[in-house]
Image (tube, rainbow, N blue to C red; front, side):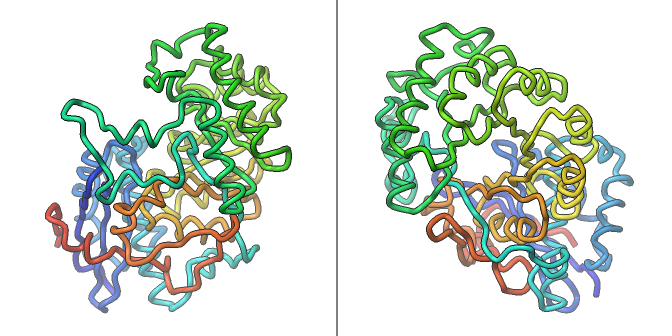
Length: 405
């Protein structure tokens, strides 16, 4: 079996967009992959355009050999950044999809066999309302530079954060949630880097604490609460926040500061909450310093921006040696969900799965031929051959696409 061609797709609808690839073979089997780099799709488009000619004529089952060749024979691959690893990851995901279809088995079989039949998930990014869809015709532009739907989408008052959390726990059955409590001020104005630089003012810190307290009261003591920080603050402010909210029993503190093994260790050594990081840490070569420093307790690699299944499986195995848990970062289209579930079913150090609020938006649902959603906070493991999902006709017929032969 040989790879004959590949097509790059850039489907968009409203505020939703993704970047995908389909790899074709001479035996009629094809595989789908996705880039999952937030706000950098064109950069990864270039990486895909450069990398795909290297795989034409290759046996798609040779995933390990192809991955290593793309990493070492492209010059810029070694120590390459997120755009390169996202392009490489999309190709790798497509090749694994082909491999599963060729052997007529789900990916978890090829990855070593599943250790669990169900995957625990958390509702992610509940600073946004889970039950509000800003896509699919519900958008309203005010004629300026902002969208009116943002007022409905983002919480700013403590009671709004609490309502978002309570909905997912009581109505949908989640027993774990994640919220960025530091997105807007009390009037809904987006906070800037100037608001978050250096040591925080007492009033600014109280803004976060009041919101966390309201959510904890709303969901009770038994629901795991993850605090997202999106690298907004420096290490000093991250420590301020963590020390102020630790009494609310935080499951872990995500991206407390700019990714850095030393600064992550500084934060970790001065707080009593586990630290999570990883969507901006690229490749096992970067992760190893975090493991050696013991500076993170939960890793969050994304297969769509970190080299695909081939690389992320290695990162997870490395983490196991250091007693570090795994929560894969999942923030792309629905194509990324089953691929992530397959790997999470196999690894021994899996912790929890991220189910992002954008997975509910109707525009994102258009991109794939099916979706996977949890029931009462748990996913079933897909049993279809390969990843168990494909690009939809909407994606395959999008205007922006290019074929490499």
